Amino acid sequence: MITLRELCDLTSVTRRTIQCYEGKGLLKAVSKNKMGHLLYDDSAIEQVNLIRFYQSIGFTLKNIKGFEKMSREEFKNLMRDKIVTLEAEKVIVDDKIQRLISIIDDEDLS
Image (cartoon, rainbow, N blue to C red; front, top):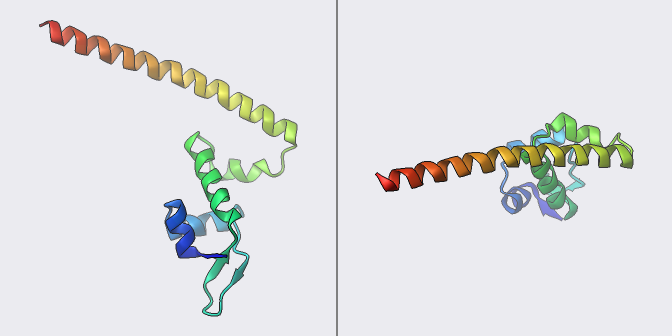
């Protein structure tokens, strides 16, 4: 079991973030210690990291909460759609990088 503070330290998120995840039903403490501090099991670390990953690829907390109501096939299809979106975004970013490289190369010739 780990405390809220330890969970925050291990996942590099704030107490408020953990409380927000709890408020949205995405995370739950498993008990309290003698001093009343919330305790989490080790799976909470993985859960917080997974939530943060999903957020980093564009899902909202509401979207993430909705994952648990989806069938496995619906979830897989959603992830496939996200891959397509991310691949399209990657093409755009790669084009921007190439343009910047061209600008740098042109400046070197001046």
